[in-house]
Image (cartoon, rainbow, N blue to C red):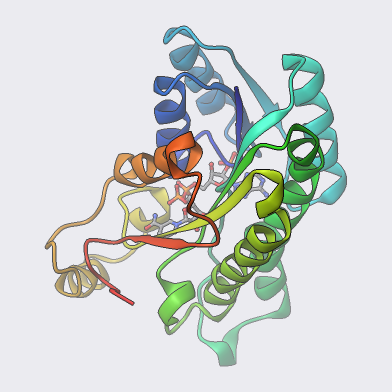
Length: 244
Ligand code: NAP
């Protein structure tokens, strides 16, 4: 079976790709800018004995997402059975200072891309009467965060999108679930100031920052047949930060 992971070259996407390859999936690795990292991930995954190929596409652009799906199909001769909507960016600032372009860039990349890719994926999944759509939300999509109106809105949108896909396609054997990571050690969080990190650490009952592999293991469950009776859910992988 084939899994397509958006924004797969780095951070959480990279860990998800490696986990799904370990699970036996062939993997389509999407990247926008990180070509070298994508190539090295492809080589690492291929060494595990599954098929892997890289696909450059800015998934926030509908035409590029569509071309990527066509290229993936042509390259693997197979439809995508597992889609992981992982690509994401931040443009943090307070509401009063947020420019429309900061709002739009984040909504386009984090939410609109998930819509484009999910729509492209369900066509074939519905025919196959099987599919898994897993979208990476965030705890801030559940509880909000000062300085992240755009990001929180995009991540809350992912949850609504997921629940609606789940309802529309449950009868066709397709599940849609979201994962809401808390504070995970990647490039996205690496840019935060030490005092900000200290403050966040105090709000994590487990008492440490999460690893990308810990998110990937939750994706692995939702990607498997073991999760067939779970759809429309959002699982927080956050060391107890939210507990909603
Ligand atoms: P990261 O290390 O910055 O990685 C982000 C990935 O998204 C990169 O691989 C990047 O690819 C890709 N990407 C960005 N814009 C793209 C586009 N237009 N088209 C295709 N790919 C694009 O961040 P991360 O922490 O791994 O984040 C992964 C996901 O987890 C995101 O959705 C993020 O919001 C979510 N998340 C992260 C945390 C955390 O604490 N780290 C917490 C909650 C949720 P290129 O480098 O090729 O551009």
